[in-house]
View 1 (cartoon, rainbow, N blue to C red):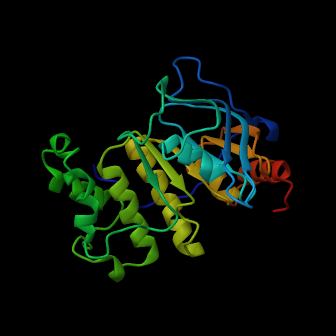
View 2 (cartoon, one colour):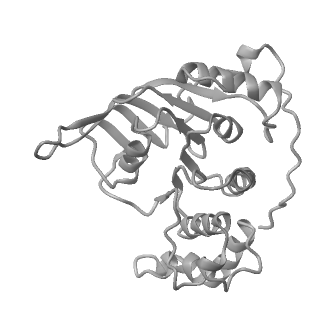
View 3 (cartoon, one colour):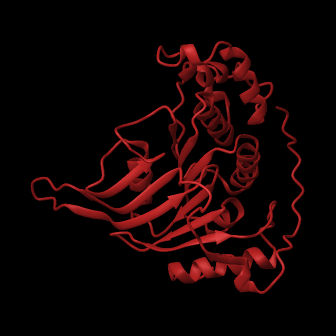
Length: 284
C-alpha cells in the first residue's frame, strides 16, 4: 500500500461550543471492547528493606477495536506498568484484564510492545531487523513471502533506500521507525507503545507523530500509547486517559471529537489541551 507522505495540516473545524470538543469516553455499544480492564490493581512486591509499591488501584477502562488511546499522567504513576500488564509480561494483583473476553495468560502474538529506546540488533541491517520476527519458527508458516512484506513496511515507515543500512548508520528517528516496522511485521492487532518518541529531539518527534497517524490510518491497529506530552496526546488519540498520581486511578477518559489532521496551533486543540492540563493540575 502506498502511503502519501505529504501531510497538510489544516485547522480542525469541530464546531459547537468548546465543551462539545471533548467528552467523557463511553464504552462501545455495537460490540464488546477489544481490551477490557475492570478494577485493576497492581503492586510491586517488596524485598528486604524495600517496601511494596502500590502502582495501580481500581483502574477500569474499555478499548475498542482499532481505537488509538493515549495514556497520560504524572511520571511514575503506573502508565507503563499498565501496558506491561496488557502485554502479558506481568500479572495484575487484583481485578480483571481481558483481550477479546479472554484472560491474558502471558505474552501473545496479537500484542507487541514498542519501547522508548530502540532495541534493534546492531549487527542486522534494517531489512534483517524488520524480518527477524517473521523468520522465527513460531511465525514462519504465517508469512510465506517475508521479503515482500519487509519492502512494504520499509515504504510504510518512509525508509526507502535504507534497507541495507545498519542501526549505527541511522538517526534516532530512523531507528525508531525500524522499531515500529519490526513490531508491525508480525501483524499484531494491538500495539503497546511506551513513550516511543520520548527520547527524540523536538523536530523528529513532530515528524514521527505525523508518521504514526499515517501508519495507524493504513493499518487500523488498536493502540495504547504512553506519553507525557499533552499536545501529542490530543493530536494522535481518539481517547486520552488521564491518570492520577500513584497509586494511579483514572481521573477521566476523554473522547477527542476533533477531525484529523489536527493542527497543534488550532483553538480547538488548545481548548482540549487546557482541559487535560487542568486534570493533571499543570500549566501549559
